[in-house]
Length: 257
Image (cartoon, rainbow, N blue to C red; front, side, top):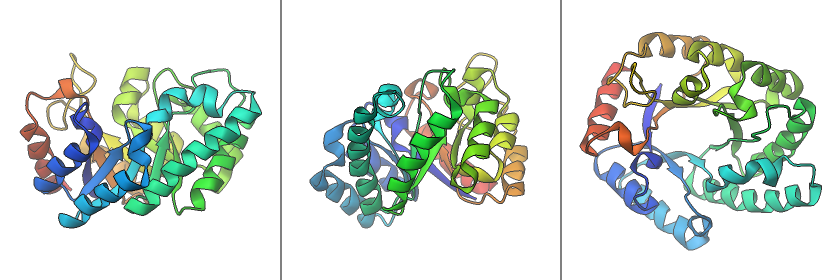
């Protein structure tokens, strides 16, 4: 199991500055959250690549700013918009390939009643595009989206078979009122990426070890599915008082695994 940190933990710090901070503090596995379209341009990606190389870090995954628009961009009935959406995502797949990232996560559709077959057809088309860049497209479970529901995740597994791929996010399970272990079991062997965080009775998003989540049991469950890839610390800025806490958490988690 590998441990890493997402640049989104440091939002709204500029992406290149967040990457530099993590690298300078010894984080070796990093998820890049692209916060706007210009950050997927060749010159910007080149600069990120140079930062990564300078510190001998790995960019293991990317996340798209366009997740806020995916309902209408990728999963509406207006087919022409979908193909424009593919063009946008191809830019991000190309950026991911250049950075060496193997995973790109999407949020998908906010419509809970979206037809699973229609959804999976669109997902498969986009997934095939991603594969052409050596990138795995992952559906993340997200509160208030179709993907918050375990049954929808199971439908995706049934329709897509081996093409089903997921990012499991602990805090999003809690926000949706879903048991983390139940969501993990619904995704099973199709888990390709993981976002970790902690919680207590007052907050559903804390740095790991600041709450009471059973990480030992969680990692054991992931291993039972054959998962031995990255578990990325991803929290919001109100989860810590200073950025050093992120690094301390990362180092503690490294010792645990």
